[in-house]
Length: 83
Image (cartoon, rainbow, N blue to C red; front, side, top):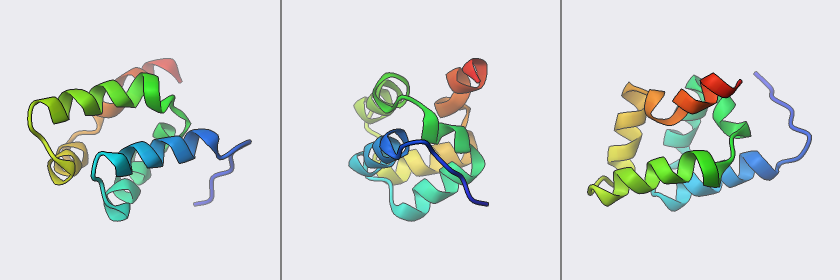
């Protein structure tokens, strides 16, 4: 499946944010395949607070990947309401 974006700004910022929080390319790919709308989200407003919360309670990149693989609603609940 190919996805086109007007600019790479949002997808790049989402991918960078995930990498900054320790998610591997494989983890990011799995997450995006399950919820492609994440790539058009505002990384700082929508995703960063959630990732910040999970890391503040001691979760690492691998922990985050496991949580999001099982239940992406932790990341995309606001996005589904918006789009």
